[in-house]
Image 1 (cartoon, rainbow, N blue to C red):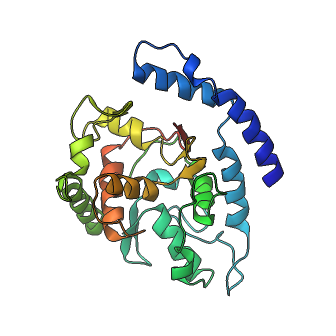
Image 2 (image 1 turned 90 degrees about the vertical axis):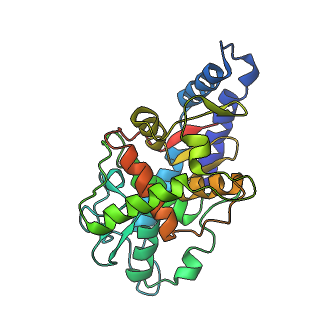
Amino acid sequence: MKPIRVAVMGLFLTVALPVSAIAADSAADGIAQYREMLGEGGNPADLIVMNGEELWKEAKGPKKASLEQCDLGMGAGVVKDAYAHMPRYFKDADQVMDLESRLVYCMVNLQGRDRTEVIKKPFSGRSDYETEIEALVGYVVAQSKGTAIKVPQDHPKEKAAYERGKQIFYFRGGPYDFSCASCHGVDNQRIRLQDLPNLTETGPARAAYTSWPAYRVSQGALRTMQWRLNDCFRQQRMPVLKYGSQASVDLLTFLAVKADGGEMAAPGLKR
């Protein structure tokens, strides 16, 4: 797969280079045209999705088991539409989980692997090959493309996760007294040339949430939602968000519920 990826990426980069030639009425229009141009050359995330499918079916760990019996909420081994209905409550774990925390749970419980080792490096570096978790996320997410988001809020723990996530979204802290809402709670905000969606409004929340996880061209990597939250916390100068923590799942639950009804289009393609 690696030689093929290099060839495809070489073609991809030849398409992506002439950014300066884009004529646009505004910076936002220019970025939109840039993404459209990149999309015409194919999304490199497609190759990561293929690798993720192989990893899903590969027997690993002390138990020599694949993840094909992992229950993502739709039944053991069912990946179709699963991501569009997460985070959600899982009875076997007795907690609300997002996709990444659930994958880790299955690696540990189905494959018998050590959790510390599994999450030791969940995110790849710039232009590195994707991590196992990133590839698996890409595969599962792609199976929900075109599906409307419907995150359950029936179980008391699902409702509690949403409420805690809402509190986290509006919580101000760090040296700049920032919150998630500082950037994503009002209209017409921008950081550098990037428009910041108002995630408290249905339309922008749907458009933003449904395009993640996404392949980030500037980093040459597929970025998951746990990475997205981690990077937002970094930019707020907040303490590092623990991977798969309850706080991260709660915040994702809040964001997913706000995007209810949006049609999944991920893996997306970002600048």
